[in-house]
Length: 289
Image (tube, rainbow, N blue to C red; front, side, top):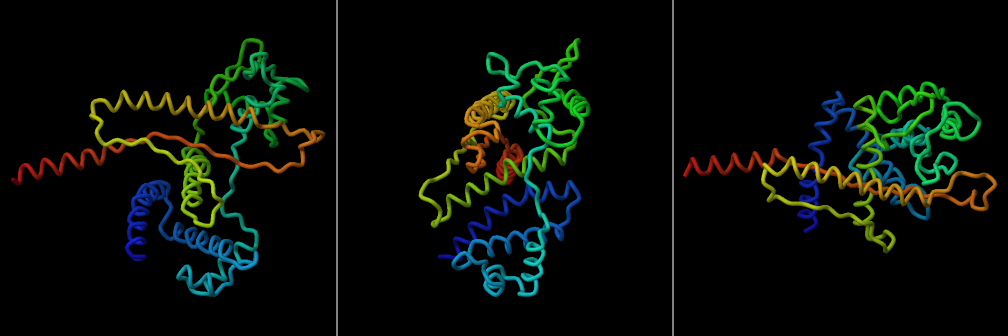
């Protein structure tokens, strides 16, 4: 029975891995490189999640669980313990600035929307916003990049107006990394939590709308409808998060309270390839009858 369950899980992961392989090959990442990061993930999780009394799992047990040799486990553990960063999870500076423009009261107008800001000034200016958002990139360079990607417009008096809440990074790999970190990772972590019998009693929401009965001629129309609704939903949730976020004030009573990272993701996908494959099979079956 257990073997049958594992086979079904592996079949499902085969489907998940196909688009991953497509992405990796597109960016010139070999199986050897991917295999190394997979082994590192297995050792990291096995070491952290299966220890006794808060201690990391010993090397022998990790080797048994992962199917690796003790030598290989030790090598990977030493690499992890040395502080080598495998993945850096962070927001891009431009996205941090735009988010602060939506959240920080200092940069909002009377209607609670991002205000048009003068470029210079110690307070309530684009320079102040850039400084508040961290980083050492000059405000002028940030302005140039935001204008280039269509996120802000510069007015005749030099003030700046935020016109686009989201934008695609200039480089395809930046967009890919951001999507993996902030969409694919939390989605998989959601499934890991919901299938863990030892996890807290609550279940994380995970809902998907699905249909295989849509006429191909209706796909472009539904694509536009879904894009609009996904965007509206994401912005509505972002507004809820923004209303709960506190501007980091060192004098506030809650300044030492820990913070949590929340993710809500929704997306659209169409699999016309499978539709074409089904049509081809039906045509082939009809011709062979």
